[in-house]
Length: 428
Image (cartoon, rainbow, N blue to C red; front, side):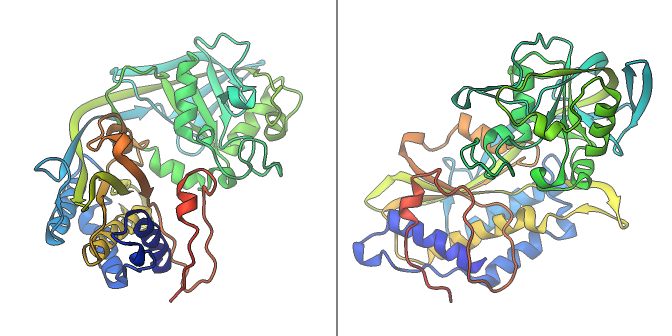
């Protein structure tokens, strides 16, 4: 982790260094600082750092105090905080999702077979005999000549879609971005697109490899209350996930001839197919409106101080949830106490290094686990003018495999930062 942070710092020094001679300077990141902050932020005292909770409030206060200790200026006028108004939706779904059609009736079990939620603030939302339609990857991407929703009036229907995008494990690097997930592969996009198409519901088929996490993460992450931003954008009535085993059962109960649903959807001539099955489920909501906080600090530059380079990380995790091995606190040491600790360690390193021409912004955002909400709010209400923001380097879930000599860069080729990153580094 220390070597990764050195590379990030060297990159930033190249962008914002005071003199040409300082291009190869290394701002030392303290491993002790990293460990200290991870230990604090991931402790039981912080209760899993869920926004709208005592643990979430304690986290933002801690970050403010640490930025002050480092002598960094408030990043939002005279405040270290940017208020992020959100809605907490505490939904209680039906214990069963009822499936009928093709002369069959059967029930799916909550958590075991499916999870569902809603972003609507109605007291009650439901699917009533909503037709289930397999919509491939649930993607509309004109640049790839791809439209999984074409040819169907989606009103009242529920889209059943695959996780990730068609390029994953296709062996074709030109199909979307190959194994590099595009935004089309994220669950947030799939929920958004289903709503834009006018669907009543959407269910994503979970699969561990393309999702990069197990069904247990879906069970814990999609249980209980969740947060959303106040918005007029379209929303489905119900959104959620089904297990891979449940998807197999649906296909076996359908009239669809090709049961290999992964391969079926990987061609751009794919057309959505009805299962011949209907789904019914209900969610009862409790609504609470409140504010969480992005935490932001500033280290002013010198000759180009009105230009900004942002380092960001999300401070939140999943809070307290379903007990696993008699422990109900999801501490989130890796995701993302590690990234937040790195933010503080980098701030310390820059404070101890020669002054930079451009200003450095340290931004700890809220509610990433709820759908990138703190980041979305900042992008819609930027504190620093986007045209003056040179770069944003985000850090999430640092691995700590021990001593290493190789470095894998996820997302290489998608940013002008690549050119700045072509530097020679020496691991210490």
